[in-house]
Length: 85
Image (cartoon, rainbow, N blue to C red; front, side, top):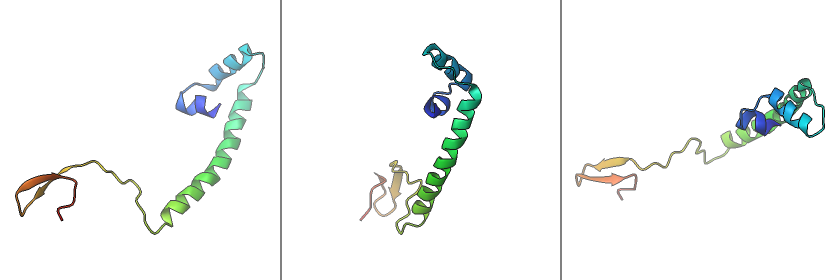
């Protein structure tokens, strides 16, 4: 349900109709309550992940390894994100 809702942008009403075709009658409010319950559990997990990331000794959040051209001023040459040593 959550994957369809948030990754595929499929509204609960359309999901309800799909489920109905399978022979189950699930009200939209049930799907909304399911979302509330799942989000409560995931909020705890997300907080633990965040705390773990922020409490590490080797923080590398948002690290981008795109190689940008860098001018080596000693040799006047361009390198691409590699060490000049």
